Image (cartoon, rainbow, N blue to C red):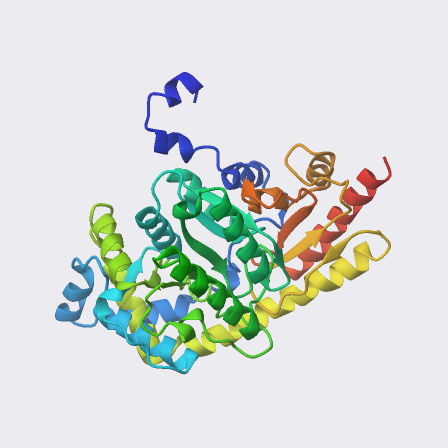
Length: 426
């Protein structure tokens, strides 16, 4: 659309335009022969067809049950499902949550709740701090509401507590501390890097944000995105940040069934501070008047029957094989290329690959064009870096093994290695 036409619409529509994920998907769809190591889709072979059929049959087994499932639900979402989720979370974190039902909200996937939460927290120009790199859709959400995502130095466990402390100190000295609304982290096998925040890291992050909350005289909200928590391949589970905050006074915990069950069902959920939950519900009432009720009833039945537990075990076994295939392919095809490194994730769907500093990975770069000509596509790492704060790294990329087969993974990594070698030799 020409700029003159776009300018006729709202500022928020302009802020939301030009998100990079659209360009990536358009490239992939335009050439179905491309091997996509970019798409964060789930493996179609893992989709729970039989479980959904069984749950649907149960919901439609009587006129009363069918009518209840096909009717409107509440804006908060199914109370039955919310209470089941609370029980599951308490069992997982090994604690009792001191919250009320209204602090739990169901949405059409967790991205809707992430958007509503950021919108409720932030006015134009307000700031949420995050790791650099971080989830690229979070960056798009912040752009779309006119708020600022500011990147903070990160390592193999995600956002660094000392760096977070320094960033807040700088913002205070610049007179911008009043604009800071929260800290966002993908704490389990993060998108894009597959990083896991261990127990000690969580304790330090909680201490830093607790100290600054006291200094600011208001809560510094922690937004914990746990989208990949269920996709654990090895190692022990770690309790969420709610272990420090059983009343959820300044913690938002976001969950979803898109990765662990089915993205087509569109059920996300979250636990929020009481006042923030009320603000989110006010916004949500004007948006959807309640997310898909039938999907919520379906998921509630699956959880009640505990059908999801063996399903998740099978899911993790399959993704573990794919992760191992990608790591083996990287070892095989990049062994002789200096300056190339990657992180070994213990779960999730992604591997973060870094190249020599002089080799840019962005759209239109020589590497991007060579990779396309070879027949493979990836997510340029710069898309995952906030525009503010820590300088962007332009020599990283996100690789996904979610939707591709083991054979495609090996072929795609071989293509990528040839592209890197071609650029490195010029």
